[in-house]
Image 1 (tube, rainbow, N blue to C red):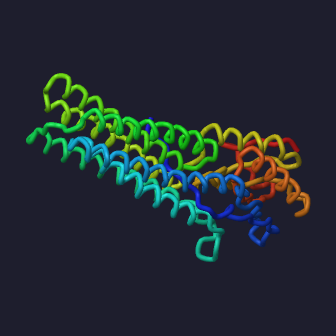
Image 2 (image 1 turned 60 degrees about the vertical axis):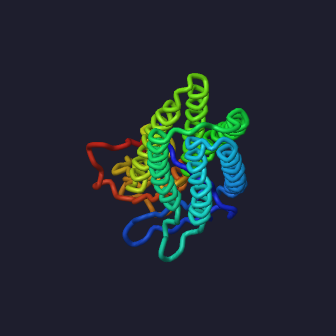
Image 3 (image 1 turned 30 degrees about the horizontal axis):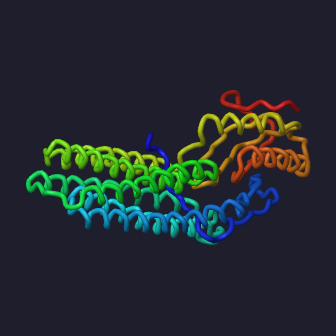
Length: 337
């Protein structure tokens, strides 16, 4: 459920393109570079700015709702929205860093900066949950009579509606643009919507029944949901920081591309993949006949590289060419010669 991570990409263009390199003395052929996401990065950059603007608007609405009612629950809801503003800014910085081209100290790029943003966001969600627990406890001990509840609830409801619409947009765009931080930001904002809805229901029930303790009880329940969301965002982000492999679907696509476009080779083996933001790193050994020339083996690598980049946008491919006596019997992708 709460498994994706947030990215807002910076205003920069794509990370850049790496060029093909000739086969070196070790037989390794670095075949591709960073896929050009200039158009996508521009769209996500504008989404980043819009997300920060929306976060400020929602935070302001929630504070006005608290000011009108004096509700501790609405106050904690406004505090949680502050986290949205902080994480939106942090994500924007992270994606601008991730969009920087490779350099001497970071030859594989800066893509993992997005996951650090997601971990920060998860940690702040957990902090917001504990702030809600604290406010719920204080409200339980010292119940308050609300002032202008109808106005406050209407304002908070409007803020929740704005958040819900924007959360859905971020989640859908994050999936479409393969941006982990953007997706996580959408899920995070959705937790904010849950907080607002829970607070609204609690206040309505409290006003209807006269039982003031309903407000802090429901706020605590929402805090538990937020805590669970933060845990999932952190755990998934850490998994990605530890070079999580491609999904089974992508791995099947990789094997199919090698098999379909590797005519002239014998087999591929030792296929390894890892994610870094929107980039997937793919490397494997390609076995060719021992009598094949460097030029012929390079042409095969070019075909496979083109197929992989077409099927998996944003992929970087490294192919290690080996002679036929290096062929293996297990865990291979057979290719017809």
